[in-house]
Image (cartoon, rainbow, N blue to C red; front, side, top):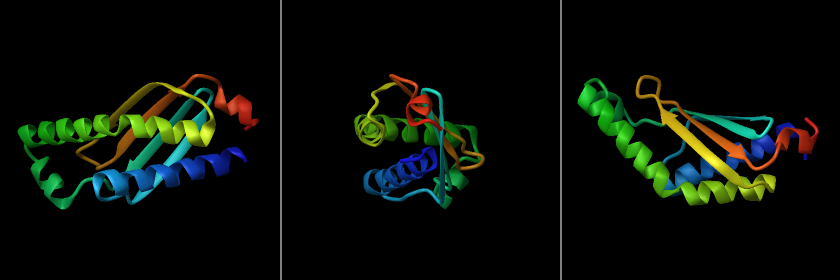
Length: 120
């Protein structure tokens, strides 16, 4: 499998996870493999109600907290998806969501240099 094919497969799997676990998926997903990291940008995640709620500081913080808690509840499955697709363990996972743009960034740090392994 080429690097581009693997990135596309990860994007598809994470989109499906969003739909299955959170009830709706992103409008667009872009995955990039860099050395021992997988960086995923998901766009179009927030509902219209969440966009409205994010107009206040209290609402913005509430959305960030709830979305972080939801992601944490599904973290184990996210690690399994990455392991199934790459053969590598996730050693560190970071994520944040922008209430301004509705984008989430996820960074998976792997146990080995995946880019080198697949020969970019």
